Length: 452
Image (cartoon, rainbow, N blue to C red; front, side, top):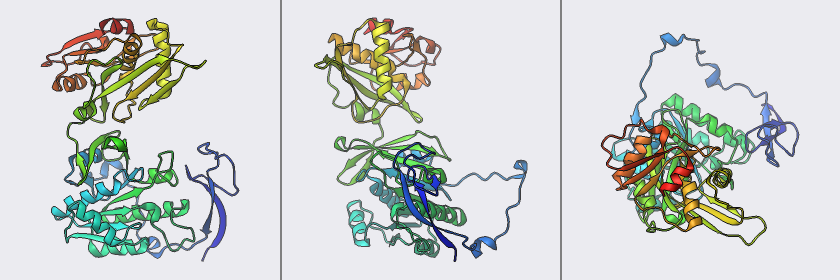
């Protein structure tokens, strides 16, 4: 037996300290230290000490084995994972409560067992009858789908070995516990140790493990930040619950592209795939409304058309309000300053509200020109044409800078029936063959504002 001692861990980044501190030296966050018990001087596990030691090997003599993918039967999920599930991988799925994490994973299990893939669904929060109630609603009643309601990691490991599962779902990581530790489930020490155990199980048994992670009020996965570093992939569920759709975004993926997104719609029968998200985001757009423009953003490997709305109104305060939804607040303030200085439009006495319709978040700088045009359209009360798409990044000098994948963006707009596009002049050499659209190449925001 080892010796116990009290240490303090940062809930955000896992920084360890012998005493409590108000601010974490690692992540600079305040009031994030919690007290935990740790055991030092524990003997080594016999299974670890008796195994063969790893031998250093030259990179030229390593045999490359192509990873084996397991298709989930959900194309949007396969896209986010990089083409399917990789055997031996550890995937973290996070999101707000009720966003659809468990529903999506149960749908995935339903499709996998139909392809004779051995699946084990482990829940530390729900009983077996509660899981079956959701399974009945999702039409996931299959005798090959194995359920387990337990939160002891030792029992879970034994069940994985016994049923020889190929895919395992752990719902959730905050409810699992290691009985050899005195810490309560969900604590920093427990989450870190459980994740380490699951990673060893995944690599040793060559089984793909999905773990569900609860999120904090700030929207990050609860527990130490090292949790996200240990896993192979991190998927986040996001979206506006009132809008009825969900976005599954990959923020980390060792086996595929990052920032890839999958679109789903929440229905009575669970989550359904949205094969054309552009049509979904543009549905309900008002016709010839001032302040409404359409932009094209690259999310992962595909272009998505979204509606950007702006409203400029007289202010009732000494300092005008600036409000953004779905866009970076500081970026919008910067563009307002550029519009005032380079575009000759004085917005100092007006409140400015900018919104991405549908609840999606856009970080692509190609939306800059769309924000400029939307603000100007609302200010002058002159609508932009319904058949116009606006693409371009704006610099502080008022110049329109080039964007990546312009041909992909324009072709997506052409597919949806748009007839006119305002794009950067520096992308004039882009391959736009077969696109029957009126393309306007602009160098400055003044040229763009004259066109609209």
